[in-house]
Amino acid sequence: MSKKSQASMEYLAIMGIVLLLFIPLTVIYFSYSAQAQDQIIDEQINNIGNKIISSSEEVFYYGTPAKTTININMPKKIEEIIITDYEINFRIRKSSGISDMAYISDIPIKGTIKNYQGKHTITIESKGDYVWLDG
Image (cartoon, rainbow, N blue to C red; front, side, top):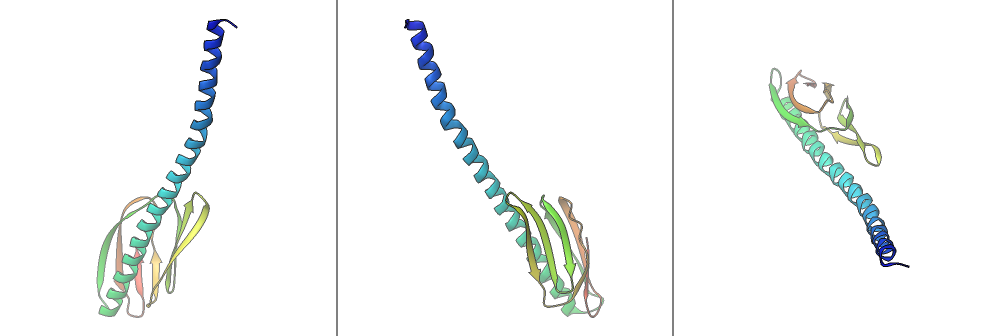
């Protein structure tokens, strides 16, 4: 084997080893990156859910015609926001699939909140026996 062919074989062997290390490291990086992004979105939604519930309860206890607005920054990957009598449920698309985050209220709530990403202004208004959310 000549020196040129030996050098070429050594170069190919080194490149093979580098690729064998690079591919798993890339997969691990993207996996951890997706998990970190999911945790950030969970924390943002947790803050939003708690803020809506606490503001709703405060307005409810003030009574009619109490009204307030809150500003939030809705993260991406929210599929749907469902408001039932005593609950706000955020349906989120995560790297592991669809997940729900529910926030329970002590008072009845109704209304709609849009799920698009970005800044939202949510109006919270006491209607006497329930609170109306609009955002």
